[in-house]
Amino acid sequence: MRNEIKVKGLWKPLLLLVIVLMGLVLAKVLHLDQWLSGLRPWIASLGSWGPAVYILLYVLASIAALPGSVLTVAAGILFGSFWGVIWASLASVLAATSCFLISRYFAREALETSLSEQATFKKLYILTRDHGPLIVAITRLLPIFPFNLLNYGFGLTRVSLLTFVFMSWLCMLPVTVLLVVGSDVVKQALENGQIPWHLVVLAVFVFFAMLLLADQARKKLREAEEKSSLS
Image (cartoon, rainbow, N blue to C red; front, side, top):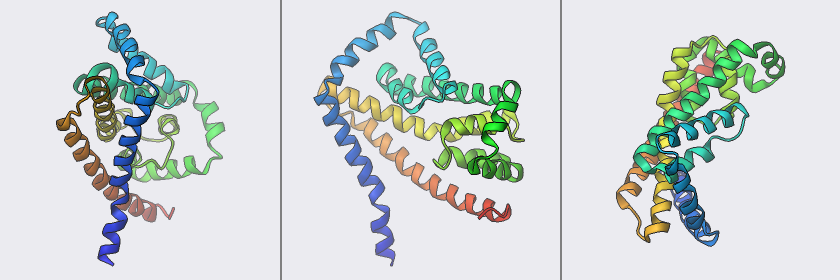
């Protein structure tokens, strides 16, 4: 039984390795390196406005309910690992906060009408009523609710703005680091023909840390559901 559990636990790391290898091959086939060589100079030409433009695009995309993960990946390509993590983390928090404030103060009635009949929102509302900060943390670590639904949905709950911002930033940071560093690895491999192994080690470490955090988050979620009579 123990060996069976170990084997089952290996599929996620192996899947990540396959995805990275496929990304390298696909990027080379599609000549992604040529596209990147044209995009980054444009961002660089904006000077200090480059990160600001990136953050603005991220916020607008989130408000429009477009996937933010694409722009998170782009941060590693545009700014590298260090600054990419900083700008992507800041952008994702500002984007989430913007949706939260819109939901709470500007479009509450319309959003309540559209979301009130959704089972996922009802579950989110009850769980946050009983376990506010914990549920914000768990839902950022586990993809059990769509990202944009969370941003707007939390604005309709009793969760405070400060709790929402801090827990969102803290618990979105691991996946931000993973996506940004991963895209930087691919970029450097394409442009320089060499794999930055120190970044690969960092990405692998963050990935396994996320697995452990996600496992703990699932346990906490089950406990919260049982206490809220939602299981």
